[in-house]
Image (cartoon, rainbow, N blue to C red; front, side):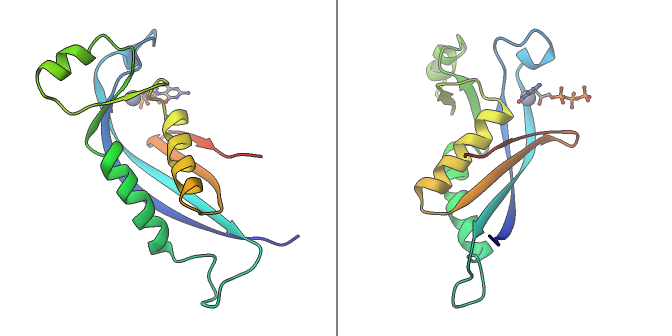
Length: 136
Ligand SMILES: Nc1nc2c(c(=O)[nH]1)N=C([C@H](O)[C@H](O)COP(=O)(O)OP(=O)(O)OP(=O)(O)O)CN2
Ligand SMILES: [Zn+2]
């Protein structure tokens, strides 16, 4: 079987902390990250594309702007949440810890639910560390 793959990169920022981390990542800190989104198709459309890069960007930008970009990402049981609420600060409480693994999965599932034949999402959290999510 032959397969075409395209990959679109998007960039965004967030603050977070990993509340159960034994080291420095338990502290409040932030990242400026890159997500690389790969979409596959066996055949090309009438424009000779898997899909337009811009279609991936639009889908993922709406989601990232609404949930992740310039937001503060916390586990839903993080004891900081009441203080953020009391001060009207923006945050996003996740069912899982806000790791690169979990964020790559969130982006993947959004694209899949939006109808893209996404094969993988890779999230570069720092210049030297990335996580990826794919299914099957
Ligand atoms: N498997 C994971 N490990 C870690 C994650 C993660 O999301 N998944 N996240 C962190 C921290 O949030 C942060 O990303 C720090 O990562 P790290 O590579 O340790 O940070 P540095 O840039 O400081 O790396 P050095 O190479 O040690 O300078 C931690 N772990
Ligand atoms: Zn971090």
